[in-house]
Image 1: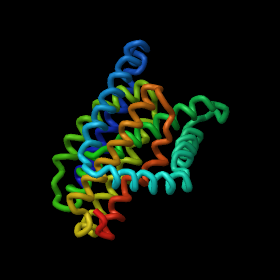
Image 2: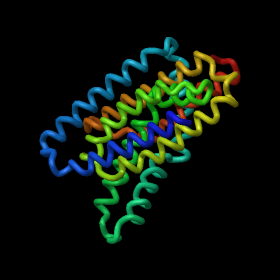
Image 3: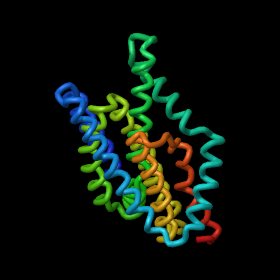
Image 4: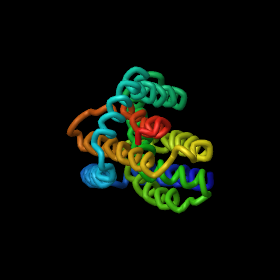
Length: 232
């Protein structure tokens, strides 16, 4: 769990720095930085998505996953959670705009930090062998990016550390129990599907579309089910 704790701490630290320097970053520069980060996010998504060599498995995972996600409506649950936190923190119950901003920052940052290949693979390595190097590397990336995300999207980015801790922690703790199932092909397609979600996040950041990425999140774990039945 050391890697998970370090990753969580760097997001909090980076987010705190971002809030402190928020007023010192010109709006034009901040937007340009966010656009640049969005392009990098899309690049990371494309790179990971190309690891899967059978599109049929990806289609199956995405279709089943989106049905589950839409039935649960994970996107709505995360947004409501963000708004609930803001109401708890705010002294003014009428600050609807601030609540929406906090919710947006929380959801966007949580998804970005959770759905990546490094989050899944790193947490699995941490749980199976105590190898934390992948999560340490991810921590550096997340810490730096959280500075700019927090400067742009506010407190919600820091609160996303809660989601990261729970998400990576559950994977790390569950990796030992699922060690016989988490074979290389399963991890490959978890990475592949997760990378597609990262691309969607990048497109959302650029304002090109409004994909409910949270409702696609179950797709990442369908490869585990396919692995249980030896389909992949």
